[in-house]
Length: 83
Image 1: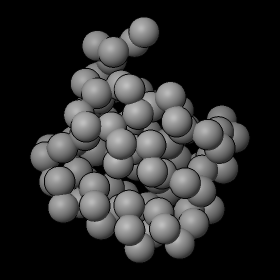
Image 2: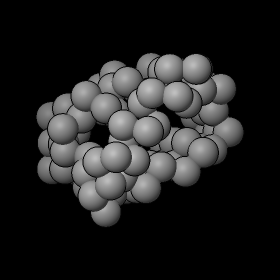
Image 3: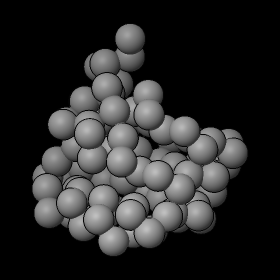
Image 4: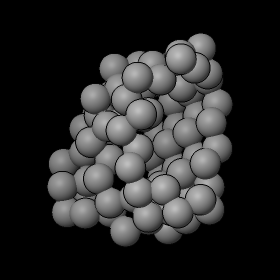
């Protein structure tokens, strides 16, 4: 129900499931440093993440699909993805 949220920092929280973030389509900055996230497909499913938005994923054990498929898809949409 936080669909108007634009900035969200969830750093250092041991988060592994980010599926609720798929519906936060007004996000422009998303900080997810130092968690337990391996699958970032919910970020690709978030249709609001686009050019000029930023996602910070440093310090997460990203899986192969996230590294080789999902990050490039987000970057192709103009999202600044840092890992």
